[in-house]
Amino acid sequence: MPYDFLKIQKISGIFEIEDFLNRRTRINSEVLESVSKIIDDIRVSGQEALFKYCSKYDGINATCVDDIKVALSEIEKAKKNIPGRYPELARAIEVALTNLQHYHNVQLEKEPKSWNIEPGRGKKLGQLLMPLERVGLYIPGGRFLYPSSILMAAVPARAAGVKEIAVCSPPGASGKIDSLLLYIFAILGIDEVYSVGGAQAVALFAYGTENIKKVDKIAGPGNIYVTAAKKIVYGDVGIDSLAGPSEVLIIADSAAKPAFIAADLLSQSEHDPDSSSIL
Image (cartoon, rainbow, N blue to C red; front, side, top):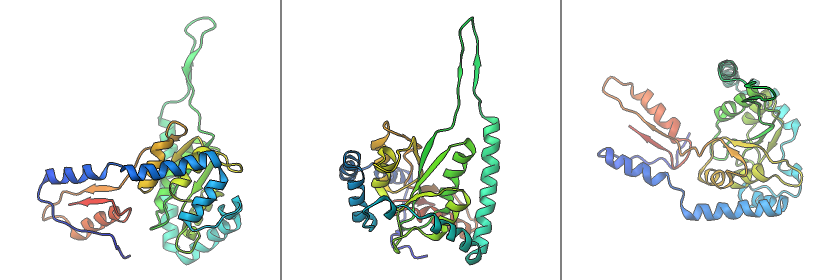
């Protein structure tokens, strides 16, 4: 896989690393201004503005929701075809899915439950835990594919009992979401998928449109524009966190295996041009 943005430099000490990381964690004013305009337009004008930004940034000339919503037939087709085309990858995804389901099912058993007490006549105090009604998952897919992002976001939502899961993912060079991602949506039972990326996807989740319901919470990683958008809409809608850019620090001596180190460095570097892998 070619990395046309990978830059390697030698850093002399820990203070230089700290300065480097501090420069990366700030969202600059130009990004925030651009993202704010997108969000405000979609919040006020709904689908008209959404379709405008889908045309500008996603390369989809949409005139109705069906133009950005992935047809169920495409998702089912991917579910049928992917195991035959990539059998080892399909098996790896199934193993990961099984492991995640087991983990989160046990997690729900161990974590606090709803409870109440009656400290006096006519009084009842306690805690009520219930799943969210509807969540929106942002799944990157424009530059590279991240099957793990879907699994790690959707499986805990399913385990918790979330009734509705909607997904936004930017289309690739073909103008469509990759069939591998559609395969995973299919095996997870997710059929509400939109070919929308960037800040416009976050605005769609946060405020909805005439024909698409808003969500209660947004989860999933994205680039600086997605992160800035989540920062802006937080309060109008829940978010998971302001994640990224990805970073890893590896401390190694002469006994370490270079191939393992390289794999770990690249696994973070591939996420985003702003990711940092420090050895």
